Image 1 (cartoon, helix red, strand yellow):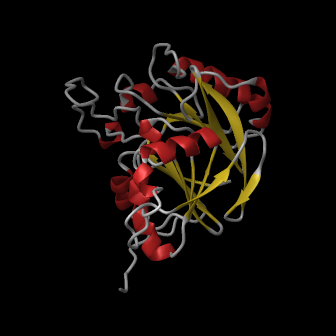
Image 2: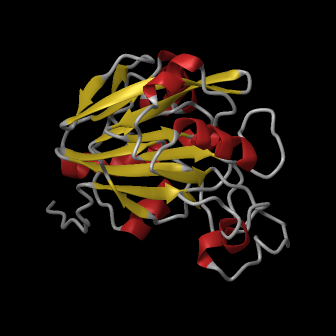
Length: 268
């Protein structure tokens, strides 16, 4: 069977597939001004990225809206996946990658910590039974690679550096790729990770809401981290409905912005 591929070339770009918190925006049942807004920048799917590296595209996390996000951005291929952690809003779209086998003709490389691999094997157990692969594209075919904080590795022609973040009682990963760092789902960056985040062009950081939270930075806390690190540009993500886009953006310091679904920035 011959397949024609609809695919936008994203080489040299970072694409925000989603910028919302775990429940997304609009939130089910909510009639607040952000959830009922007609401004498309307030429509936030769950948090994830796509990066166009020199030798292919990598996804960071697989959100429950992954299919919709990739179709929206006309990204027809992914050549690898990086996982920050194993929470449902960052993992549960993984089954959508099974279609990629038709184009790649091999298992999809997945880079994650061992606990994330174990959760994937539990949550998607049907993909790992002895008789799972009984027809092409029936289950996601994955090739696991175990990664660890502060141990850089090469991926699709680029050096990737994972680093430790704390997400309340959970330990998750951030990633530095070139002079861009991605710090979603965190409320504390350990000192050794702060050292790895010096000299950034772009800092992408969790800023859930105006108030403090047990496992996420508030907007003010994220602003303070940015002031300490002094990147050229800061983009806030993992945003809840308490942060209306236009109103919040108007109050931010120079060099700091709310990210939004579909935003594209150059890789540096």
